[in-house]
Amino acid sequence: MPDPVWVVGAGGLLGRGLVSVLKSRGHDVLTSSIPWNDAAAAKAALAAGAEQLRTLADGRPWVIAWCAGAGVTGTSQAELDSELDVFKAALDSIAGILCMPGSAPGRFFLASSAGGVYAGAPDPPYSEESITQPLAPYGFAKLAAESAATAFAATSGTRVLIGRVANLYGPGQNLAKPQGLISVFAKAYLTGQPVSVYVSLDTLRDYIFIDDAAALIADCLDRLSGSDVVAGQTVTKIIATQRADTIGALIGACKTVFKRRPRIVLGASPFAKAQAHDLRLRSVVWTELDNRQFTPLPVGIDATVRDMQTLRSASGSW
Image (cartoon, rainbow, N blue to C red):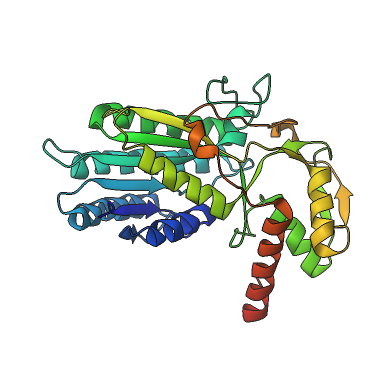
């Protein structure tokens, strides 16, 4: 019987996608409603979630997938510090509840950001062996979370997977967050509004569809239980298609789907300096898992637009 999984951040794009994949593979999946805007209440809810997972596992090995995180490139330092503080408190709770001597072994996944941690690094394409060099507090916060997860692995004996995720997109993306260019283009298409682009059109990004990312992460969690991974080890894996497209090519793909070119306004933003020009990615870890068919960009864009149309028709807004 597959191990039970607690998905933290199940309301977000990645969390929902992972819940769907894990349920389809027969896992018991636990989700929790966490009051993220109240740090003390969030810590208490996360400790309660760990208790629920212990009950659900009932002595079996367990898995936690941490897909939470509201931060983006423009998030303030204070908000990022609070988010990191809650994450570290959750790790302490998990260690005290699920990782006591004699407990069943656990696996832990942390969703990190490839764009955040490699933004200022030299010599793309970037692999897991490349140096990390953030350009914004968001990227430094992601590295701090990775460091906390690595320390948690070493002290608790938990096997940890850090997934440095490329530009994630697909149905269900939070349109209130200032990220997700594909969703922004799709919304502009449906509303007729122009889109402001703050970086050059030859900027390179790796766009991965939510279903593909979730399936790859689920496969990586299975791989994490392999005999070549030892208790307390941390494995870092890039979650990407390993194909980069320019924003110009993305506009062309949107034109194919929309039957008209998105209305683009080139502008300036203080956050543009935190955006790398070239974010090509090449994984050198567990490369056998990358041998798969990824959703073509026009197909993923079409699915995103159709979902937004359905949502707008049902609710009258996003």
